Image 1 (spheres, each protein chain N blue to C red):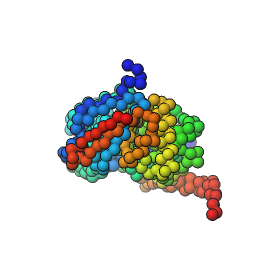
Image 2 (image 1 turned 90 degrees about the vertical axis):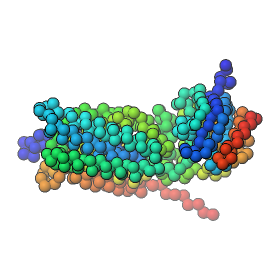
Image 3 (image 1 turned 180 degrees about the vertical axis):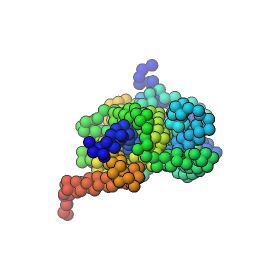
Image 4 (image 1 turned 45 degrees about the horizontal axis):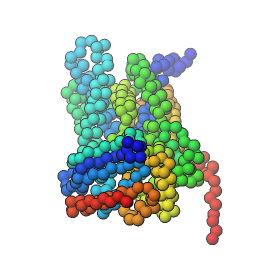
Length: 217
Length: 288
């Protein structure tokens, strides 16, 4: 099997539910190959974030199989940004640097295309939500993962930042042959990620017992 | 040699042991506060106090030779804080949104337990006071040597691994609970349990929380400097407080050390803010 056709993640008949509540999804199956993007959409409460947490083992599955075919160290996850305050006084540069076992050069950080030079010394606790989000994405890209799971990464970002993020992710996926699972509220954004192979998954409302549709473009 | 210097020589092991232990606790404390584990650590500490008191009570009842039972309180404190940790982790994972109320209830339960044990064994009164307030002057030579033996490797580990440990703290703060590595958890438990038994509850929590909390009010120093300053504040305040309490015998050692830690940390904050204000580059004003 060539590297291109060896899956990064296979999910078979996955079901998960709100603890003590209704099923959010039943019998969900999909495979993600290198350089492939799984685009997940759905209404609020349809279980998009829970799906990512279930894949990562942070939420219990009701049934089914989840198999990652890459080492855990090569999987990166960015949850929705909460109001994150970090107790230890640090700059955006510090937060990016500690993600790696070695100290990255400034050039390396800037080459991610997500952070500008004058933002590096900004205190983490004083940075805007958008700056924090881009710094967190830069941390992820510098670790060169094979699979990235992003939960609504465009929240808190203005148009310029959104374009920066899209361009950085495109370049990164191209260079590293990585795959991406992206949760989004915004339809149409996926068109910006061409020419990557795109799968889209729409999760239904939990009250409708999650009708699923999956298309491969 | 002056009388005061001779007095200090008596504590040739106690002072360096307490300084090293205080430094290690302060660096670990910065990580624990970053991971939002403050209240859990109070529970672990109270668990260690409970374990120490129960074991001393048992030793009073059953042991025939003091030498047989020398390490029992330390081991019992470690076991009790370990069990408290496991129990608190298990229950909080099931009810993460009620974390703080669960920790507070556990803390009250363990505090009550400690007092009940003391009521059962009246000889424990002085031990209870020692477990809470501690006194460096009563640190035995054996305990001081063990303190050095524990503190040095923990400090080396935290200095050498500062980058992954800080990342772990950041991810724990960001993702919530459940990301602490085994090495971090074990070194924290051993450090806290032994500190409670040998140096007391107040010394332990003062070194864990005061430097990092006060220094956390500034935004500028940067991660490495924060850790260094936390350690240095304890390293300065412990011998200073100890020396002052020897010179002024009415002053209690550990409360004095805690008081000095607050004062010195505030001075550092003031200095950092002053330097920050002096070096601040003027903002360019854009005119429309």
